[in-house]
Length: 234
Image (cartoon, rainbow, N blue to C red; front, side, top):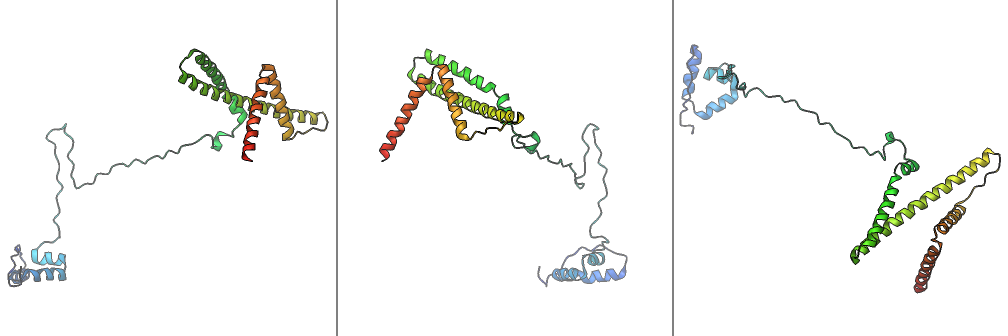
């Protein structure tokens, strides 16, 4: 709208004659001048003087929402905010009993004692695999069974070796304690002497089971293979 065009503003009538005169003058005022006047006076004074509105926005009366059927849900006004109860997320922290101080200290002997049934299961599985190896005629199946049998056999041997080593160490500790109790000077054994004792016990076990000759032959072949490798490197 240009400055030359007159503004068409609908102004409600008022009983105050001074306001009525001001409104008559403003009727012929350009629209841009009215905007400038509103910015100068302020929205509250402008609305009260020109438009005759006491409040900038009309108050909305509260309406009573009624239901046509009592079984229907109650109709709520959209003006009222709905406050939903926020549930606090409970953070659960995982706990590893192996590294938790509350679960006590780790005891290797107690662990082996409680899980000793695993070795019995391995021995039973090894016996079943050996029986299957005798029955099967498939070359590929035989090769797979041999690999599994060898692995289980090595695990059982290693476990037995650790158990014998622990028994030897416990026996040495008992001997030292017994010597102290009797007032004698205890004889302490170093690692080299402990290893010699373990080897003696190992050879005694092999001799009792009749596997000593086979073990010596295996060790001889292994040493010969190592010697050949050393000669090739020179």
